[in-house]
Length: 255
Image (cartoon, rainbow, N blue to C red; front, top):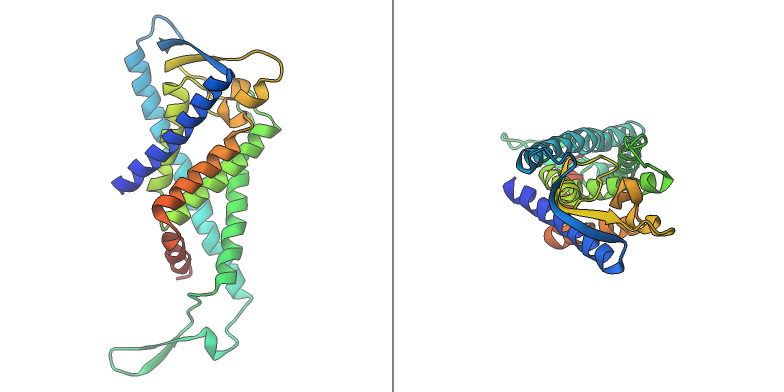
C-alpha cells in the first residue's frame, strides 16, 4: 500500500517537474516570486496545509469514484453482460477440479477468455475517461482541448489500476503528486482551480500563440504537451510494474 502511494506520488510529481522546466526553458512561463499567497495578509504555511488536505481529498474521492467504482465495477459489469450472452458451448470452456472427497466437479470458469477481458477493459476505460473529462466542463478556462487532454488523463489513471493489480493506491499517489506539485509547488493552475498559495509563483507568457503551449488560465492540462506527459507517466508505471499485475487483475476480475 505505502509503496504504491509513494511510487505514484514520485511519478506524478516527476512528470510535472519535467514539464515545468521545459516550459521555463522555452520561455512559456516566467518565475516572479517564491512562497506567495494570493491574499498578502494570509499565512503561507496555513494556506499550504489546507491545500495539501484539499488535494488529498480530491485524489481519494476521484480515484475511488472513477477508478474504484466506475472503472473496476464497469469492467466486471461488461464481462457479466458478455457471459450472459455467451453460455458454455464446449468442454474447453469448463475447468475440472477435484474436491476434497476426490470426485470430479465442474466449474464454469472463464479465466483465460482474453476477448472478454479486452472488451470489458476498453469499454470501461472509455466510459470512465469520458466522465472524468466532463467533470471539468465548467472549470474556469475549460475548452475542448482541455477536455480532450483530460480524457487521455483518464486513460492514464485506468492504466494505473491495471498495472497495480487493481489497487487504487498507485493512482491516489499519482493524482495527489500531480496536483500538489503542479498547483501549490510550481504555481500552475490545476484544471482551472484557483490557488491560495504557491512555493514558486509564475506568470504565463502573454504573447499571442503561447497559450496553446502553457495552457492559460486552465493550466498545464490545457497545453499541447500534456498528453505526452501522460504517456511518459504510463511508461514509468510500466517500467516499475510491468504487465504481470494487469494479467493477474484481468483474470481475477472474472471471478
